[in-house]
Image (cartoon, rainbow, N blue to C red):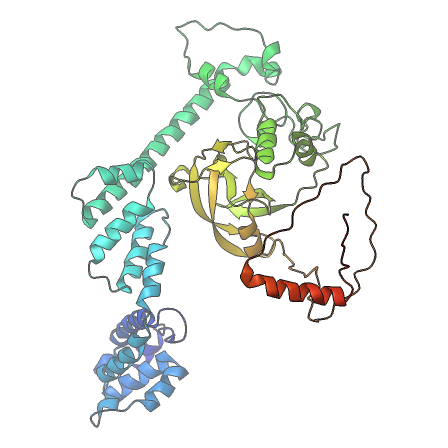
Length: 470
């Protein structure tokens, strides 16, 4: 039997100092019970089982065991009594308020079953009276878009029905993606086959390409695939959206000596583009947020930009944010956010000229600084593509990206004496006519106090009495 015991992995030690101690004990107790049965220790004497339990629990629990007061003699050799005492010790340390907060803060994650498992674990430690109802509401509140619409369409929906709908929706999405990928791969093959004889003209600009008419009898799939290709931002030609297919990949720009783009698409010499470009949209947005003139903003985002920016990891993507200490909110472009993450927002962005702007929505995401690994949860307002990603004052201070020094620029006056204020020269315009103003009226209750103060100032020669017109 000793050899059989050594073949099983020991349960981890019981943690009674961190996290939810009550939940820690439940998981640990379950593993100990499995270990006792698997190793055959349940058939041994009670004292041996108690020793095994204490050995698994660790030295901290041994100290607690030595301080337990047993009601009856011999209870210290009974494993069930020991587990009852440990459970009584751990349960009062359960923080239901904190666990409830953690339950409602669990973000939605795919696959759905992982999200459901996390919710069940959190709900078990919250002591909800209606656990199924709370889990149902949490699921509906967490999902977004069409996912949420499907759940809200049901009049009388319970937890089981919500789980079935979520699993069916997730599975159907996977099937749709598979069909799209297979269709896309078929179109790509058709395109390569159809345009094989035009290899020498693959990277000619669209304006220089010969106009080819396709008879209706031919397949339109390859033609539609070609027209759907957008102009590349690095070479200026139209090709498959892969860096290996781009002729500029690995080349050096003649203008800025940068890599992986041609001179025609160099951003450093084309920072000011046409009215329909994304760059001008950035200018307008920065002008709206900072309140600077358009000329200054365009210079700021050019090749010699003096704006302070930081690279953050959002949704497993590196996104560059401009640090704006004058902004009240954080903004992020739509292309960095998944559709199901966006939630409706009541925030209205107001530009410097008081013109309101309605954003797409808002998201609550984790920002990770790749330089030092610092993390923070922040609410970001989603704006259309082409606008600037901004981090407001609250977020950049929390991430330690900026420090505000509250220095005292005026010394504190603690003396009752009047100091020497020095001399000052005032220039008076002789062309401005003099004007005599009537004396201010004082309440009767303050006249005596004011007269005493004026007399003190006259005595100290701070004020000089004037009896003639001035």
